Image 1: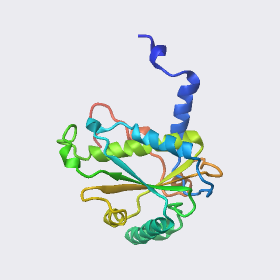
Image 2: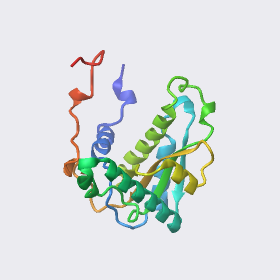
Image 3: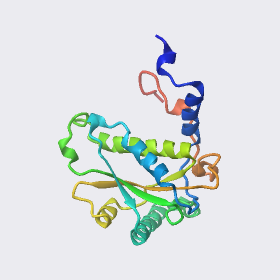
Image 4: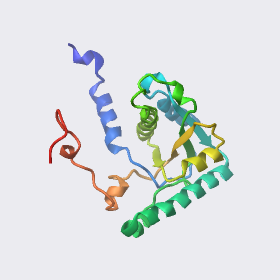
Length: 217
């Protein structure tokens, strides 16, 4: 088989792997607006993600109202405090971390699961959570596209889904999955911020990749 027929050029392929390697969960942003055509490309990237049974369960709410953004931030701050209390001895270390950039970033999007998902059985009969996996693919698509555009993106998951659903008037059955912060950055982190801050380290491949069966301990 001629591999060059289907493969990208060397420079194109290297760019894909560079975006994957240099993608970062950003928390520091400049407030300069993101050009409309760039935002449209990022949203299009999300909408072209793979989805189980082609159900396309993602819904995107773009937050343009300052009051709504402030309410979202307040909800995140409440959950940040509750998370800190739940961490016990790591509370103080957690409180020193910058976990979001919602007040500084140019754009805030809420990525959600659509309502009526129970009608989609293809690929979900035994794995109903595949709708969530599909939304995660959409978020990753947008993240990699943003990195290629030189735009930072951060995923905020510190919130009560019921509170956010009510705030954004989501219909019954719909559920928020992520608050996404998008905007220009002065620089991308050299390594994941939680790694440089000493919160955790990247696991080596041998702890994550097995052959044929789960290893015995």
